[in-house]
Image (cartoon, rainbow, N blue to C red):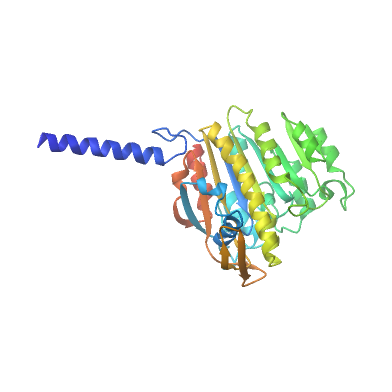
Length: 363
């Protein structure tokens, strides 16, 4: 009987170790404390967009390294189908709000975002997007406005925030405004280094950075080159110097636009560009075991369906059911410290709750 008990203990011990090792990508028997979080949002990215990219890339994506995958429910407070403002606010601030609203609840009250929680706890914070930083999703992590259309007001919210860095387009909302204010001068007065090209962005490795590389939006891929992965690398290189840790939001913005246009090739191009940015985040998480990377979407766009393909040649055959957003659940992939927390099916608002728990921050 004692031998049976001993054998059972040994088996359970082995299983626990195996589960622990499989539960994080660090190879450690216990999950490290989360110090850095990188939230990556593929705007409009559903499962079929992911698999279209995988097919076009002949069967592989960097994203596949994630051991834990969940699904989030994306509906907004006032619609079965969310827009990017409400979807972004749900992820950033942990509340369901009305379509079009940025960082506020259904009564119009400001709601704290994960970047604001992080800054309050002494962490560095950042936003990188392949669109204007004042656009709906990146704005949801920084600004508090009743309408996503208020991009000049959103730009002012960036200036008045505690954010460490932001990189993307939208320069005209800072320096060609209807009120004739030049917020680039205000940014400089607040200690930001203003960079207007990607080369200049990459030169800034300390302090605060405002990288505004386009008047409106960066060009679609491949015209914009490696802007997104290189911007993610530049952001991490700056933020990682903070001993307390950091929180970074990255958006692959133009997956959504390609799907709105029902353009299969553009969808694949944007998806693969986003996947290269994911690799940059994973590479850093491999270096720093206290890093968690979350990859998700605010919603699916286009009702994309794969009707055929060839993994050996990268051929993708697809049709779209819509030129708008759809209501389906979207995937949540997680990599690194605490990744197991993101398995399962849950509300998009739960993503914030899970991040705060892993950071050890009170809501």
